[in-house]
Structure formats: C-alpha cells, structure tokens
Length: 256
Image 1 (cartoon, rainbow, N blue to C red):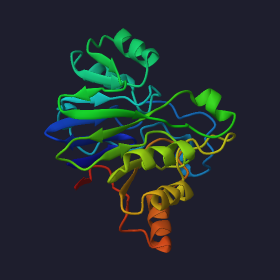
Image 2: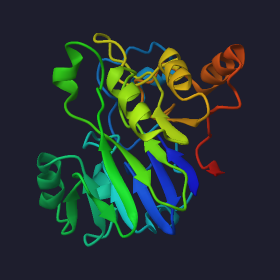
Image 3: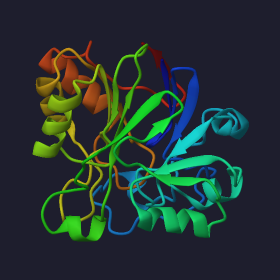
C-alpha cells in the first residue's frame, strides 16, 4: 500500500493493486476566489486558492483506476476535476444527491457507496463524519469518509472532512484501522468554529488508535486554514506522538 499526499485532501491511494484518487482538486494555483470570511488573519486569508501548485503532473495524478469523492465542496471536487478526468472513469460517492451532480457533469460510471460495495476485491465502507460542530453543520452539509479493506493489505480509514466526535470513535472501534488519514487544517470561517480537525482532534484520534499511523492532510492549501504543518508537527513532538502522526508535504508518500 502507498499513500501519496497531492494537495489539500487530494491523495492517491495504491491499494491491493489498484489506484484510487481521493477528493480531486486539480486546478492551478490561484484559480478560484478566496473562501469568504476566513477566520485566519494570516496573509493567506485573502488569497485565491489553491494556495500551492500541484506537486506532480496532472497525468500522474489522474492515471488511476477509480475516484472517491467524499463530498462535492469545491476544494474536494472542483471545476478542473470535472474537465480533466475522463468521463468514463469509475467514481464512488456518498449519496444519490452527489451522484446526480457528478452525472450532470457528464460522468457515466458513478456509484453510491452502500453496504457491500466493492471495487473488484477491495471492500469499500462509507463512514460517518460531521463537517463542524453545532449550527455550522446545517451549512456545511453531509460528508463521509471511507474505509478500505482487503485480505492482503492493512486497513485504511480516510476520515474526510470531519471534526473529532463520537462517530469517528465508533468507526475506529468498528474497523480498527492500521492507517488513518485525517483532514487536519483546522479550517474555519469567522463564525462557526472548526470545520475539520485541529491539533487536539488529531490527539483524540491518536488516543483512540495508538497503534495506527495517522496521516494529516488538508493543510495549507485553501485560504481558511488556521493550523500549519509546522504547528502540528511541534504539537505532535510535545505530546510524544511524532512517530504516529505523519504530516506530509505536498507530493510526499508513505508505504505500509
């Protein structure tokens, strides 16, 4: 198994002989206006996103067997992805609403992840997620994660755009993942609090799965991030969990 961080939540997962592209945001740097009302007062707050270039060629990124879109926010499924990805590629989504959106963009091979969903011999399990806490959930909308299982591979849990809450604990208790990918930029607007995990959320994931490798992505790519890679690495060092919490640069990959 190999997991490559591309940019933001976009990753390429090689698993049991197949390659999956997760949450493709494929536009060039600065293609889109800033997310409105970002909490961050840092210089990135008013910058167009993506904030960084892709670390490798588009051809390398889209040369995959299937795509998984955890939800259709533009930093997970963007205009460029709709234009660049081949219309016949297999795409897995969380619900019929997202399937309809993607089919309306011209894609022909879209499947909702249900109980018993598999891609060839790889089991795909949709997981719960909450894209924030409290009132912001109504605006953020429905999201999911996905667990990969195969007899010859370690179990992988892609948590998606979720904060730490009891649903994530339940997924960890149920599936006992060996590798957990968390979206950990602590992205926030002026009001509403964290939309994805911050450093304390990551620590809760570690406490729930102390033997797992945790890969922190969704960092420093969209203008409303508030947690930097440097800060998360420092926090992990302070807590003594640096061997468990991996914070990849764009383009970096891990093999398990």
